[in-house]
Image (cartoon, rainbow, N blue to C red):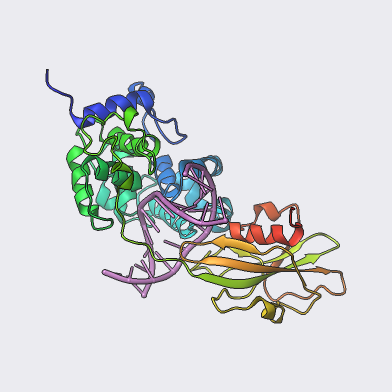
Length: 359
DNA sequence: AACCCGGGGAA
DNA sequence: TTCCCAGGGTT
């Protein structure tokens, strides 16, 4: 009897072990005739860029409840989209998401193109996402390569070339493995395998449907793949944040960051620039207005993609006669501050302004 | 080709 | 605490 092909082995495993995800049509439901919604596949794939399934779930639910179709999202206010995205990170994704929805609504009659090359032209859709939508939503033959696929395939074929140099070889291997039947389920199966069995550390080789054909199965070599080019270390930058409180209402002074760049378009507490040579002692000189600024006992630490940040936080409690006139920014009351487009580092700054160090 | 973009979970 | 993970855009 002929041995099963690699794709057959994996699809059999997927039929039994596919993760249940809010945007996924399970193999069973597929058999009952249910088809994936391209809008939901696209939305989930953009959210999943550089982000884990666990972090995405609640955001996905919130987005699809607020905007059930791509046309709804296209018609939304960008500010509302940024607020809904706050906390997910990589905020250019949210701006491109909105742009992409508008393009699909305006130029494609509200329907996503099925072709990989056409998808690739849309804002925020790169090689990975174009392939993922084409194959998962439309069952096109496409080689989907994300971090999971890179890990699984470098191990399966013992590819020791470091990333990113190994990318073309991995893409070719994935294209060769992908079957003509159920290419979308196959892509999702490889990614599920990477997420649950072929994990970065301590892979569960004993449970792997590909253990019999894997070059490194159950070997200590598995954990060392994929090899990666050395990453350069992150510098540390310093700055100060100023939390002004209206004691009558509890409102806090906020302002908008510039539309592009780091945390582009998001909301922030007024503060200094963030620089490697900034000394916190000089911070009060850079306050947005003169007041009785009191330094908080706890420093905020936060790590961005390419640097560490340490923020010294100051708070001033203002009354009617000390509250300044504003030249930009707004007062945000306690009842609405949860809905502001505050990135995580700014939530930490606000927490530091009001909390005491725990002992 | 090099650089710019957050945040969360596991060890 | 630290370590590790993970695509697209811009220049």
